[in-house]
Amino acid sequence: MGEFSSEEPGPKDTSPLIDLGDVSLDDVAQIDDSVLRHSLNRILGDAANPNEVVLPSFSASV
Amino acid sequence: MRRTPTKSSSPASVPPSEPAVALAQYPPGRHPVHGKPFPFHQFILKIASRCNLKCNYCYMYEMADDSWRGQPLIMSAETISVTARRIADHVRDHRLSDIQVVLHGGEPLLTGPGYIDEAAAELRDVIDANVDLRVQTNGTLMSDSMLDVLIRHDIHIGVSLDGDQRANDEHRRYASGRSSHDRVARSLHKIRARAPHLLAGLLCTIDLRNDPVGTYQALMKLQPPLIDFLLPHGNWTNPPPGRRPSGTDAPYGRWLAAAFDHWYSLSPPGGRVRMFSEIIHAMLGGQAAVETLGLAPVRLIVVDADGTLEQVDTLRSAYAGAAGTGLSVYTHDLDTATRHPAIMARQRGRDGLSETCKACALHPVCGGGLYVHRYKVGSGFMNPSVYCPDLAFLIRHIHRRVSQDVGSMSRPSRGALGTARGAP
Image (cartoon, rainbow over all chains, first blue to last red; front, side, top):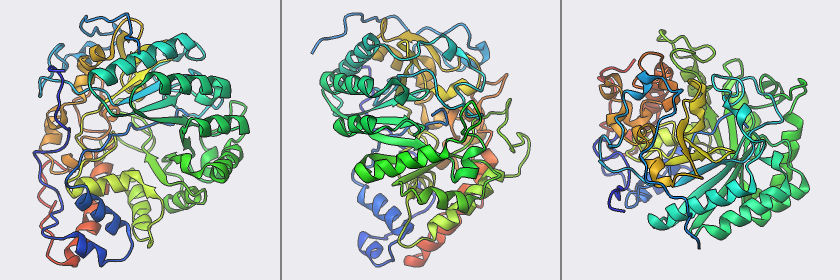
């Protein structure tokens, strides 16, 4: 185990290209059901646990 | 639970067919950044080495690598068993609670329902973790008995389809030339009728001749929870259709941007388009959860039908042997594969990118593009993606739309891409 990384992978050394400032989940709840609302809920809701499984790019072989 | 008896601690070897230039960037035995590899979380089992379709863009059968000819038609029961034990060992050694196993091919359903039944039972029995078991299929062989098995083992189903019949027929035909679209559509209706929760999504390879919005709408008629638009495989040496390697035009970027505008404007939202949602997520500071984008380390391993271990098999489109590791489940444990230099190279994040990519403000989102699309004879994979202008066009397009909307919510968004260095 010691020779394997226990760090959760992720972009830790870069700033987001879009800064949400102090937009909150309450703010998000005020907007229409939309891609934007889902996206903001995802990033704000997942902030405490950002690790997600990276899925392979499946191909057109099947 | 038995530990697999044939462990080996020998360092990862390199198949002799790989060009030396591509390997020079992979100093063996050391992780270039962390000093430590990541354990695998995803295991792709090529249970069938043949396919009943003859899609003309297929990286398995129509591109640089024809090693499938030497593979057994299907993965043997013994290889399934050894693979299951290797995964079980890996899960236990790294205390993994959740993994994903994908039954892949060729066309995995060519193996038949009895085979899938036994393979799934063995995998679930031997591996002591939550196993997200999936099958990636062309959707032409979804008999009632096959669907019974998939339901019994809670196997999620990804189906490849390129749009309506005309769009799909451009590439996805039987060897006889017959269309496959109707059979796939019938299979999807069957899945939706009996087990809608098992339909994972549709994979659609882009053809620039097809209308982007029409393609999205045709796929959405089948009510998938997710659509994955895939860029056709190609690289700097063998460019994709319609992509001039030296050009700054962005035909795929424009195609995707048109699809994005339609998708983004739907309220309530339509089915999720993974490429778009992951780009937005990465722009907002999240981690793109797909291999094609972002900087997260790739943590998957492919087991071929004869038990050999491969990197992600799309690398076959670059050159013969590109996906090879020289390892096998019969002779090596999976920890050995994590130390293979080519696998570690795809866990390096930003440090694994070319200098051009590092200098570009977009790299946290595009991640340099899909690894296989970076290949060029002479410099290996240390290049931007051959799709760099397309990815940059799409990311900038999405950034404009999303940053404007976020800014209008309250405070101005401070995100800006106008000064990005190195971006096309």
